[in-house]
Image (cartoon, rainbow, N blue to C red):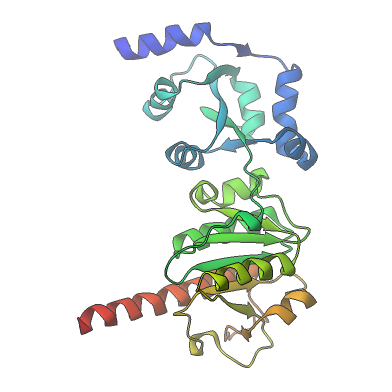
Length: 294
């Protein structure tokens, strides 16, 4: 054991320990299963190496880091996080860590208790250039929401806006599906399309327009024929019902994704990823052409 590891182990003995299902453990467990508990306390759990790493890199407000104490050595990554963490650290038995990690056969090394960030769309700041905002209208699946957040991050969107009665961005399924993009890309909420339209009016007063482009399998305009060079609000509808009537009315244009085979349609997060790729493709091509002209 190195001197550094010895210091970590010695410091760990002074940390609080949770080895039984006491009130504190039950509180942490409730963040996994009950949205009302997460909302009321403003807390949620971060599971997984990449999500926790990105949360730390992006200065997400983390309250407590839980670490496994079952006699087995922690990895270099886990020891590095603990050595660099100045906040509260709690040692938790392997059995209880496995429950919090939702992996019966594998206890995670670290889990973080973090604070939620509730961002209303009214707080969305104006961005320069041609911003790209992705609206997910009333998603029902936290996993689908997390997957779309991940795609939005990968393809250069500026923010995701979740509208209506929707899945919780801080549900553990969403956090895991985003693979940490939840902490790198701003996620806002809005009660309905009107709130987003009001935000668009503010950007127009600042001299920048945002075209609202809805995705609709019934549209006769294929996505690759639409010019996404300007500021865009891309609307992805609910997984089963598509866009709401208010969003259909708000759209400046709707586009479809041509598909073949026996599939009747694409799922919402898949459709979102295809649209985001097309937007990124067009914008990269326009940027390359502009550089070649100089």
